[in-house]
Amino acid sequence: MQVVQGLKYTKTHEWVKVEGSKGLVGLTDYAQGHLGEIVFVELPQVGDELSAGSPLGVVESVKAVSDVYAPVSGTVREINEELLDNPGNINQDPYGSWLASLELSDLSQLEALLDAAEYEKLCAEED
Image 1 (cartoon, rainbow, N blue to C red):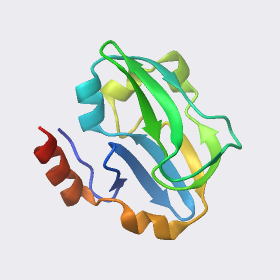
Image 2: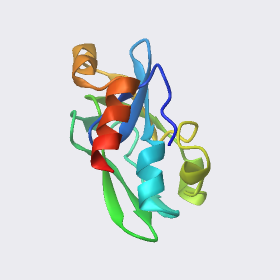
Image 3: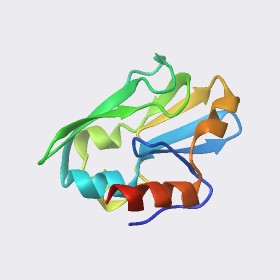
């Protein structure tokens, strides 16, 4: 399992990479590994307002259908349209295959997320 330093993580296995007031959101390596082969993604619409913890989209694998949650509140500025045709890219490169880019509305929410070491500990406890 790969955990990337410098990202923030949720207990529901999403990551966010913060660049100023923008955040790229994706699924962790742990999540994609447990889901198995991802065959479908449903992404939010550009302009959607999301609250931290609210559904951002859906991923469907050969094993299960799972909601993906927004790690922080914000407005969807861009979606990774390549995933609509190639959802398996998440399996190949979970940290390069972001789902959505958000304009973050409350940077203080980042403090509630896990750093890489805390996330690794969470995953170890779940296994």
